[in-house]
Length: 109
Image (cartoon, rainbow, N blue to C red; front, side):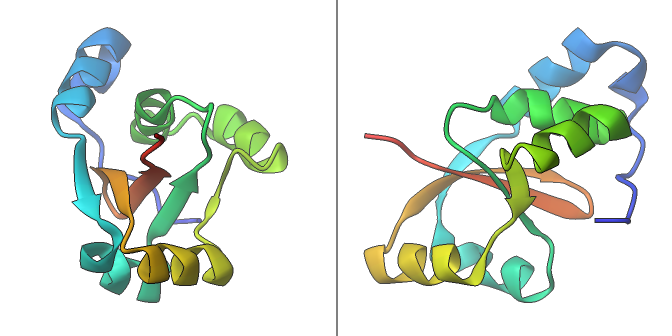
């Protein structure tokens, strides 16, 4: 994950950026995101980790914070086995685009 996200004008105000990202987050069938997975652009945000906080950190290029989440296994490229499971379950995921990435999180319950 070396590509840097496109800078957003809201990036100077984390609260404004978080509100913007929250409005851009949607439930979508995983099957519609498979091309991003194939391109290596799908990033899983594990349950219990705030999807909007991760999106905000990525938009603001907060490398230390992102690396911490990755080291803890809370943020990672979507693994093959997870992608296959989501396909077989016809799963819905929360999705948030932070170019060039698509952040995804399993819809719980």
